Image (cartoon, rainbow, N blue to C red; front, side):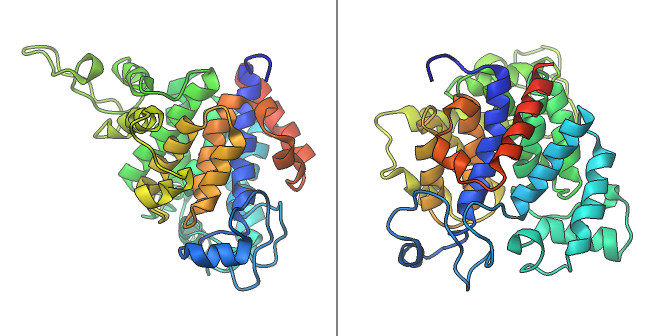
Length: 360
């Protein structure tokens, strides 16, 4: 791009980057045997692919969204329609538009697969008739981060609002405090990138300053740059419910490693082996941070290395796509990824409208 993207463009880029990452994962999702993935999809996956008949998402076509992308789009439609995050409206959409299509089993529902956290929420809402405040389960995965990134883009200029809305949205389906903390931390990082901050070794210091000002709900006792607390100094207030700031410190460590010429993961897709192929959020976030810090201005390389690493590559590509999309902006995403995405014109329009709300 010839000029630095605007906040509007970065917000839209974050959302579209996530949706592209989701669709890229539909074909090669959840291959833990990389030789099998390459037999089915070739030595290098370079774009959207059809899933094989015996795999997850069977029946979908290249460029379509999985259920994760569908839910993200539901939240996107909600915030664009309301001009803000309206939890009741989003929950209504889940109750009326998604849950009637589910039966509580994994290999069913829109997108061909229903995740653990959504199955649990469906069971509690539909079978047990519980309120949304009681619907969250103990899944340790990234489903909430994959949709709540819409809120990070929407409220990027207000870190406190990002934390409040993201943590509340996460609790709808995932009640583990550590998962909520890591989800909130990821979205806080994304919000800084939408503001125009770089993903580098200094990003955690910026996040910790927001903690000290009471804008992010993490506990901290250390001084500036993690220096020891001063003897006799005032106690550091514990804001909100997160017991540790470590989820905010991880991004700087990962970014420093990604940008250190003495530390190389080659080829970069092997980040999945270094940090782990499984679904849990503590495997997924470090890999996404690494790829987004290593390829901050190359959307294609970032998401394709995320996909070619196998395992839970769809979530890795969603999270990476949002981080890099925020850095390059919508205008920096190559046309091949936009053109191949089903309903791309409508999705781009929604993302741009969200960007306008973010500027406001």
